[in-house]
Image (cartoon, rainbow, N blue to C red):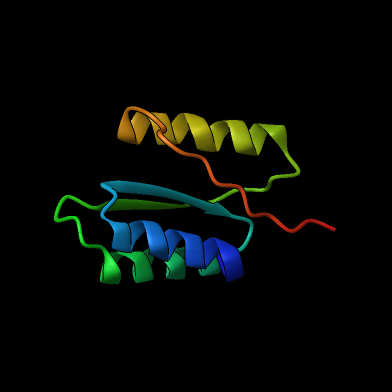
Amino acid sequence: ASGMGRATALAFARAGVQGLALGDINAPGVKETAKQTQEVATNPKFAVTASHVDVRSWESVHAFFQATVARFGRIDYSITTAGVS
């Protein structure tokens, strides 16, 4: 929802990807990142989802990936930029 994750999402949107599935524990932040990707996306078919995901929870991560495949049909790349202390 910020930092490297947001920068990566924006770079993919600018590069012309067709879809992004964004997940973060910071729900308002990930929604803001999704909004920003829509503003800079270069692909006219661009779609983005924003979900609350807690990477400390296998169930949360698993549900996120299942929802992503259900929405987009596949996953081409997975970038994880999570800071957990």
